Length: 159
Image (cartoon, rainbow, N blue to C red; front, side, top):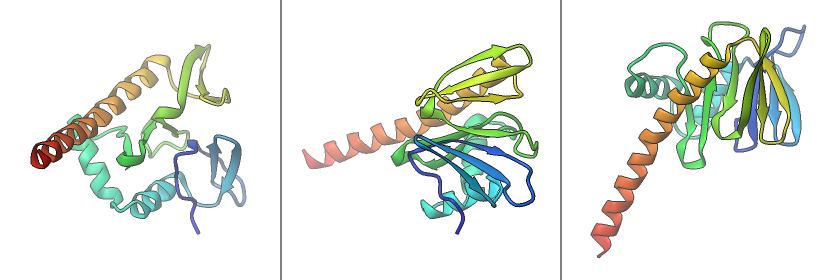
């Protein structure tokens, strides 16, 4: 069975070995998986009740863009993943937005510090990563507005 992204999942990176294709960083664990990061993202979307293509199309519409789209795994659980590069790039790493504590440029690599103080080094500039953070926050804001609107309607109906 393919790994399912959950609230403890902090990051997903690709590796090339004879067997494993992905490293998954959880709050208190590191897991090696035979599925690719994209297979894990797609399977996780289905697990939480949405199709991968539907989630991709939603991000595309919100951001009016086709590249480096953040992924909404489950908005109710606050699971939003952002890629560092195009998902077609083997060096693409995926980070859970709410697990990112800090990031800083170190010469040719970016150090991404997670909430558990673990550091993952990626091949992307600080500006590019910051841009991805902002794009992901736009997607999160879209869901937050939906949530607020729905709750106002519930309050209005129940009065």
